[in-house]
Length: 429
Image 1: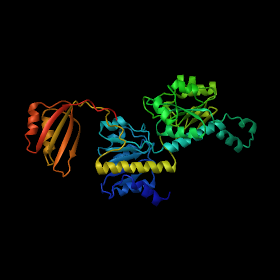
Image 2 (image 1 turned 90 degrees about the vertical axis):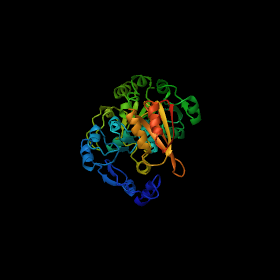
Image 3 (image 1 turned 90 degrees about the horizontal axis):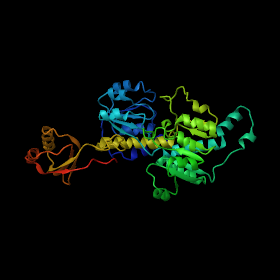
Image 4 (image 1 turned 30 degrees about the vertical axis):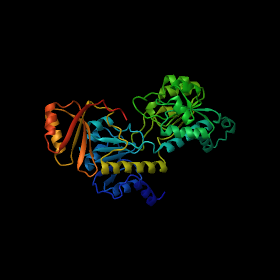
């Protein structure tokens, strides 16, 4: 896709019909689609692009530019970045995972963190299949021998093949589903384990219900790991799972290195002839280039790539378009699609509903009264009715106001009505 057409595609979805000159500063600290840069600038933003920033240099760059928005791919965003400026209000991970961002530090400073889920699913699934086929046909080994002048057809004519065998998928998000569809195309039986998967859902998707992880390991000839890298999934593929694997099975990990216990997998490679296709590792270099020392890649039957699952032109164009959509929504409506650090619940136990005339100072009067009562506002929304003459403020509080403070709110001549109801904490979305 040429630059002109890519710009049109990226700028089209989610961008206001007339770009509002927001004047927001944007720092892009990784490689990013040129068409995406143009589309962000078309929103009225001032864009600084530095694809060579290291994690150590990022805080100084943020302090120097003082942007409102920071965009990264693999660059680590640590606590020092948030300490470097008080202006930063949004960090966007141009990809699905966001474990390279200190989300807790962002949350403590009131900074939104957003990601771009599902936009690179096909690209990662394609790499999964490249690694599966490499394990089955030992393509890297064959290429290395040919380049060394060695012809060894007798050795490489041995391959199990994939048709009719069982593909086990750990995690059924966007990537897992794309891997499953391609497994069906190869004529494989597809079994899945996911925390949220039920037998009914599995039937509807045309896949077998794996039951539990150990059962999935026992019945699968090929395992593809496709879960997010979180504390809950750390070491998910561990000793028990590896011990349950069939001898000679293939394990593919394109999720995060932390998900697989490297020592347990190494033991299975040595003792059970397991082959592995890895795009991610427990200890990866922090930048785009560097020395790599993970010993697992020296094991026979391990085929590796450089954490490039999402690195296709198609995927990066889709991710760039989503980044532009997030920024456009933030500028135009103050909303952050795919925000990952909104609290799953708050301490709010009361809902104060104030119907009022849409006039200046009304909400200031409400909040002043709540402040005098030492009552904290947890969340709120103010809905404007057709004609813009009246509005309704729905304010979640950590405790209900007393009659005196309710009467004080009602005393404002622009307040139409005031009610208080008990609520339960907001469920995780």
